[in-house]
Image (cartoon, rainbow, N blue to C red; front, side, top):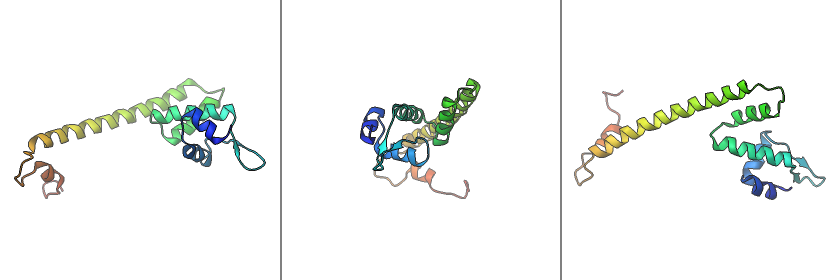
Length: 132
């Protein structure tokens, strides 16, 4: 398969596929004229990577997951530990986002949004001696 075919089948843009090759996540064969020639195994890896990235795994996590996937001697505990670490990062991010939402909601409700210059949003954003 050429890069267009594998891009269509994997749902990944050609630019992403080239990037994954550049960083060594995939290694398609090269024909005599230098064109990439993707095998079914490359397509499978790209679909795997696309799904892992959609779940928010980092590139390094993906590298580890691929290595574990290809290792017949792996222990599922290794995969679970990696996924649990990622889940903790997601939960921490959600907590930060919820805190941001709570603060911004409070500020939006506190702002009259009229023709007066007073604005609690700007006051909160501006540095003050109290917060330094």
